[in-house]
Length: 153
Image 1 (spheres, helix red, strand yellow):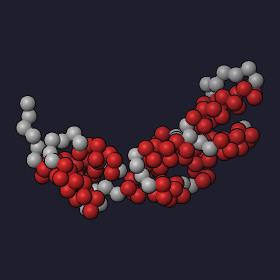
Image 2 (cartoon, helix red, strand yellow):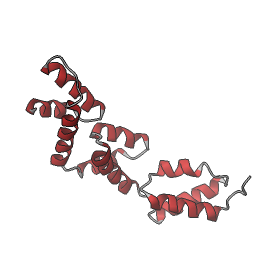
Image 3 (tube, rainbow, N blue to C red):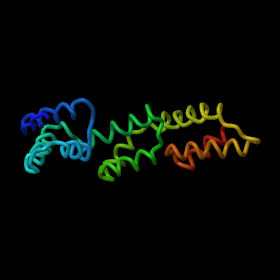
Image 4 (cartoon, rainbow, N blue to C red):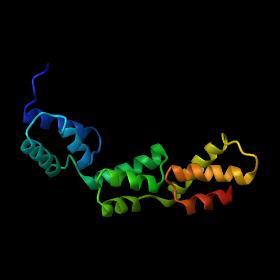
């Protein structure tokens, strides 16, 4: 059995945790719960991390939006939902989404649909488009944008 960590050791671990990738307050709070230190020490550590910009919700939201569009192929609806689950303020979510380049976002949707179209089995064109639309909407893309892009197919 290992010896419990001191608050300074926990602070060091949390600083490394936050430096490794962008984190939101909820992620940091959840991680702090795993350490056996007092609630006061946890609050002090969180306050230190925020004051010293290890944790920044706005920066986190922007990185999350960028990463999920570019790496995961998520649409804005799904991203918005996940950011809300992480406790990010609605204003910050909307502001982070304004940074999205509409042309890049649209092209990402087109690429996803083209890739998926190769594997979709359908008896007719209508059914094929319906399946593609369902797939894109499930990934969080806006219904109107999905159908607009599918009309161009």
